[in-house]
Image 1 (cartoon, rainbow, N blue to C red):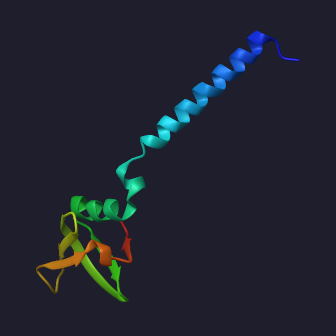
Image 2: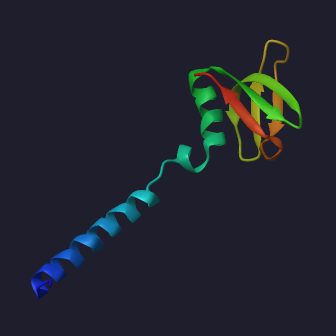
Length: 95
């Protein structure tokens, strides 16, 4: 049988652990919240190519700008490629 002090200590430790883990969940990075946007930004920062999969097509490009609704990039074949973010099915990258 637990004494009152042991019970209070157990409850206090449990609440501290629960509060700490809840705070950690709130402080997730942007890349964990939106991996698509994080990968596009990484392509821009590292100047590395990615492949965007959209509507059954694959578009290889380097991201030059990331806006609220669009990703803008370039490739060897085109100096400017603009794709709506809501049309992207997936992204492949090998950084």
